[in-house]
Length: 491
Image (cartoon, rainbow, N blue to C red; front, side, top):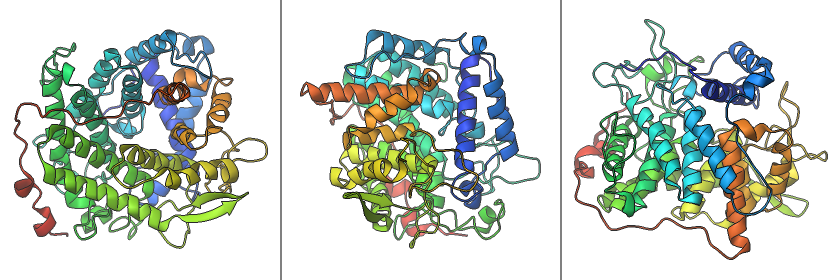
């Protein structure tokens, strides 16, 4: 059975955990005065615990912090350098791979961030070392999934194929739900990168297949896709997707209600946008995998329809305003009209991350014109005269919030629509040296800088293309596995 005790075996993972906890502290105090996640049924650590953990990180001696490899950014413009590439490899190779999802380490914590950063670096460099290290993390994620025979019994009364994110107290149920979509997406991302590179398919992965998930890149990718479909079919589709609208709602079940801190607010509620990003991550990347495989058109159609329903829902609720002659957006933390709970920077950056991913895919009808107001919102609403950014997307600060500061890393993708965001982000992070211990910040800088360099030389970034279908594999057909659309019963 997978251990559910957090462990911090070396400095790199220790540091990554602290950065993650600091992020949780930042978003927990924004918007509502208490964590919005708690209002919608997700498990959030006590504020006191987070303060203690984040404070300990700040008190670590500087010589200890400098002992491990640090990330390097050498310049503000131009292609990524060999030194930057090597420093990123060194840092990620020292980062300990977690064995469980406690504190959402595999969602948006250290491991989740590692997978996304490694994948992004592989995409811009083609360096197989990044992909191989990425597979070490995604293998650990799949190995950590709840065992259907010996794992944790969650609020459904079953040992679901999900990733528990908290140690369960004896005699109490658990409320795990939407965050699992992000882990599905991380693992599917690795599969997708393999499937986009058929020259790798028959080669053996250097790790020697320690978990029995497949010796070759092709076999590993197929196993990932099959296993992520199992989690989608058995849990996410059943409990989080409404069959009539394909929209995301928290489980409509008194069992789920019973595990929430605030009775009556947990179940049958629209899923907040940042958590819809997590779910869309899984569905989008699996749709792209199946399209590359050419094995299940009905599944691709369904997965894409679910993401499209989420995207359309978002843009139907967002409010357009004009500030200094620029179209900007205002939106809420959950789907709601009129806006009562203004979105904050922490969650809003995750919303933007998911929408940008969907935009780049070209699958869901999102245009550059629809994305540009996000960049305008940061520049003309959230950014203050002193150059700093406040905590809410309407330009306000939450009560007792942190002082205005910098941008979250996902916002850097918006420099595609407002190039001036790049030097702003760069100047905020390089002098402070925050990037040196953050794969997310560093990969965002390097990847966006590489894209800018290619555009300046009229070299378009490579786009994923459908490859020839590999040897036939057995993935259960839609008609036998996804019968929930007509028969599932909500309790």
